[in-house]
Image (cartoon, rainbow, N blue to C red; front, side):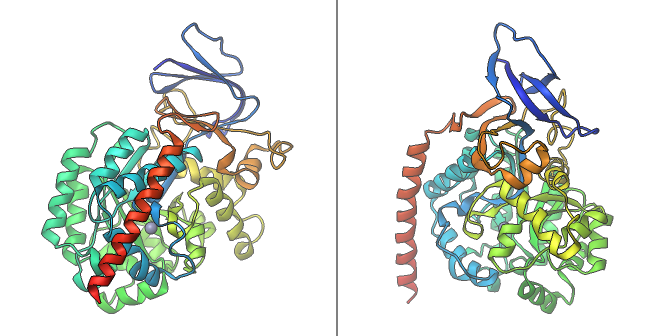
Length: 445
Ligand SMILES: [Zn+2]
């Protein structure tokens, strides 16, 4: 890989002093080698002119489902439990290795084109090798794993026996965890409803044994909380805490309906929460009190969740919505643009325990770098970078993306995938998947 010199940018560093630097940034050997008002071009440099655009740290989405990308638009206007049982689980169950691969591929391509450089991803119960191999190919910085669903009465067609699913997880860890340093396995019990106590405890043990990120959904929906309470006698977070599921390597997606004492548990254990505002609105789940969590020092990240509950995978949309949604609750100064931007960058890095490598543009950190154009009328006159990035631009303004110094997107075109053929394959696999669901439901009748 040749060194890259990015010229003429407004560099939003997110370093400790939150410096905004007008100038140049050099990428070499996968790392950020230098930032300065002017860096001389060296002979072997690939020079990219940012033309006054924003040069920002790659955005982190700490809750996604690549396995669901093909289901976009098939599951609109439903609340969580119906959405899962009537649509998503039967669709996940209809995957084969190839449809899973294509679903991951188009999801990765979409997210990278929109400025995402790191994701924490929850898979389905099978075919996660397809997701890992595509994540490796795409250049994405990836944490993820197969999801665990071993409570027969509450897992629909995705039920898998405890022992089988844990053996599968171990085999994925052997094949993929740390295969390259940007590919990491994350142990992913789907949610308390679909998991036995045994598998939750086993997940905690796996987290410890292999030093993994632990990733689950919790307290997204009031019906979900009622089911967990009925079965365990405890509120969701209290139950997870009792089993040892919270902790500095644990990430809870959503965490909308939490008692004060549950938030205290989250803070004390240094558990991360991924806020997914689009998904929370679309599934009518509620609005998480993020401004309050932030005051209480909860580690926060954002995520677009899955394509069928959003239906975009745009990290800029999540920042914007997160900032806007807090204001009617807590007042106009809640969640200013800079805070939202910090959650999307450093926040995500902290939740994944990767702040030493990603989340800001500083010398020596991994070169996960994005350029956002400023030539659209909606942002061209906005001088405050945070205001522009959070309130005025969208992922479709992203022109360039590097991950670990490798050029992934250039002038808005993906450099690894041929966009048209990825879309063509996705269409074809989606139709095949649809016909498999029809066959399966016909058999049931
Ligand atoms: Zn989710």
